[in-house]
Length: 102
Image (cartoon, rainbow, N blue to C red; front, side, top):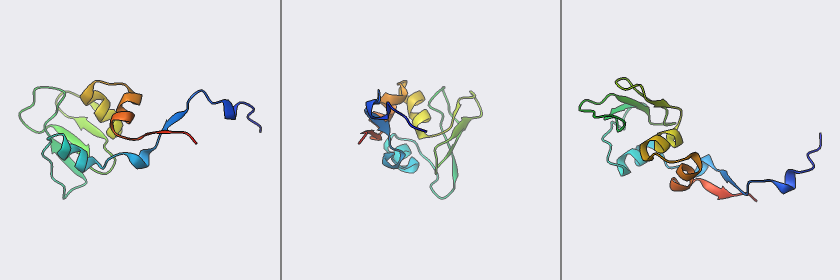
């Protein structure tokens, strides 16, 4: 199958997941206390007024779920989008994972 417009792509940039920061470093950088010795860690949820850690986050891929307010997402980009209230592309740029297509 031929794709005649493949060279005339609308988008000149793309997400490169290899450039994303590691979840534990991201959490530390943003002031979240977490246990690095486990795959899953409980942190204070930034999406509601939390006094007990109620947000569970996977330290390998970043998927998360708050057992108090119900906020959830599938990766670090989704967490950053909700945390900073920004778009997908802005989150990718902010995390340093938005690169020019070659």
